[in-house]
Amino acid sequence: MSMHGYAAAIDLNLKVSDYWLWAGKGSTIAYKNRMPQQIVDIFERHGFIWGGKWYHYDTMHFEYRPELLGK
Image (tube, rainbow, N blue to C red; front, side):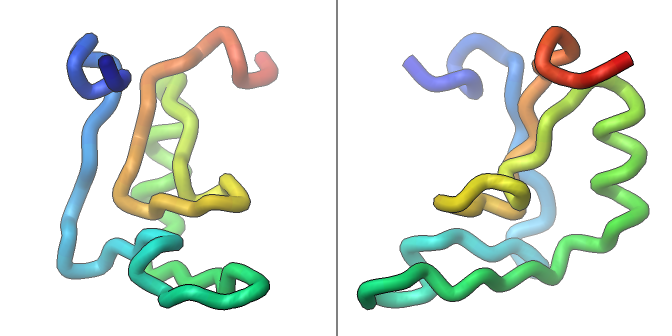
């Protein structure tokens, strides 16, 4: 089960989203992000973590995990 299945995650706006596997196969993962920072800031302010900060990035992914964020 993913966090989506537990209703604790949401994917937003596929048109401006980037996912590490879409970047192609290579020895390194080229980071790409088109998600507006204002959206990321709003979600983080409300207890979500953003998949765009992961090495295996998923910029459309927002997951409700307030226990992982500093107060």
